[in-house]
Length: 376
Image (tube, rainbow, N blue to C red; front, side, top):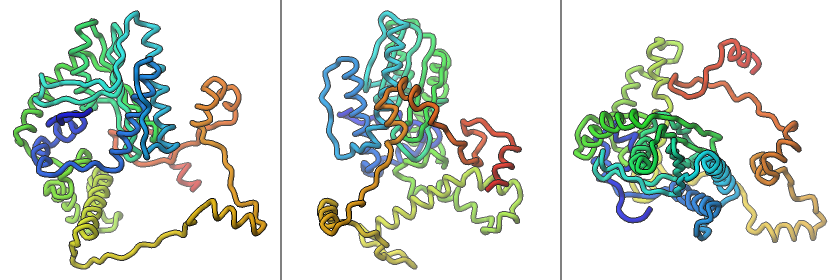
């Protein structure tokens, strides 16, 4: 969406609600679009075009240097899901409403709070907001997701002019991590959250009030490399003096586990910032130097290499491999894929991993975990 940027952006709501003064702190830094954000924008533009094409709405197919086979495949998965929701809405409702890249305004709750919902499907009973996430780093979930809840408030305000909505449905679709989730909330519960949580915390954020608080929401904060609250929280672990894990108490180990991912991310962010300052701005850091990293050999021209190898009598120089399962399913269609290849596809057990209780996946029993560990 072009034009004015929202001061209280729904996409940053997780930071604002958990760390209200982060808003005014971030305003001291310039906006810089990362490669990941640019790729995500390109993917969203393609998804918008394909959905509008299905809805027989006018749209020109976008072009971008970011359109790799892998990105297009991810977008296709999302579009297929959206189309299935569109067709189901047509089946159960005489006059459903569909809106792609819908501007959503929640300024009734927080001044200058607006954004864009990727897909909105409204029937006589359900207002469904679908959000495409093309990131490959961290899974995002729909349950109690503040960005989607804000979209839900804005869409509900419009949908209730047409229907007596009974359910606000929020969906995150994250194809590159094979992650999707849906969460339902009643209109009354959503409005209560808006009044009791969003409105007061939003007002604090706009004023720069409240306390700084570090957490997983720091990941995309523009001030993350300079934030003292974040540094102090992670540096507090130094009080354990880097003792061997066996010498730590159970409580100390649990405390480290709670922040291990964020600690690793913070250290990586600080390193990336320091390296950029050294390379781009000539900053010198005590005890560090710039060196040239190792690199792998590359062909100057694959066509010329193939010609030269063939002229020398070498012909077996290409590799062939099957397309990925998702691409094969797209080519054949779900029904034919299931009929022809269903018996030849399996999903292996995922690697057993220790995660916080807040993680959405169901816990496995200890016997299974112990057995797998013994097999390693």
